[in-house]
Image (cartoon, rainbow, N blue to C red; front, side, top):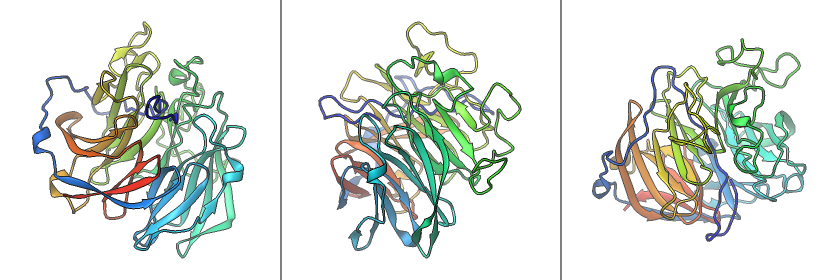
Length: 384
């Protein structure tokens, strides 16, 4: 994710796509069904103002924890946004696309994870124990680090999957056009979606490799890799209803994409970067034979410039929205939807609301969604 003004916009964000074990997701074409007029009726309700809110996670007791890019974490509850419960601002910097980039709880709210770049630019994932809904600072430990060659395309999102493992997204390392070819290399964690088990330190590492990871028997590949061929997977999520994986992958110059993988996927998907940008060969590249095409893409002929992946809505407040994947674009700000069935888009919608410089979404414990404007506003998506 690259932070810019509205006129010069965000560029770095996730290239997270899934090559399917059970089938191939086909990108929707211009003749795909579009039912904008039948989109759910929603409104954005402002619930808080933060300082560059950049990520959120459902927390214990019905709370939503909010990460601010400069390094603070605050808790949103019925009383509003509280004082910081964590401050690592002296350990990070907001140069380029750096900062505190992602947060996540495990399923029992017993451990809390932060993803940030340290002052040298190294991507770092740290863990804290949680007791009674409060962080235990003395329990902090570093789980994983990754050196970043440039200040952009850090990725940084992380979340626990339905399988109980921690998934971490890293971009291709930055600059432009993947100069080191990291997207297609299997000997680096850059340009990848990772899957690890931080609850079981193993073999001298602060985490274990899940036995089902797709490359554990390949001596040329990193065991942590779940899928590859990503440019900058800025925001990804799992559908809480089906377990399917959805990734918003920010493009280079022309195409923004959303990628989908079924819950039954065994991993190993190749999303194509940097030989492909969406469905299109990049700089004369040849499409890999195992390329998993995006389920949805859009070009930059409009106001869009950087897709911001969201969530499949599974709340109860807006029945007409249930089952739709909600996403936006940092430059355009319009909150949009696609409905996906068996790896194909069956419906597209424009919710008719604008979240500003939409840098992230959050999902609370009831499945309701929040929209984060990097300028500070946090809105909940409510029925109109």
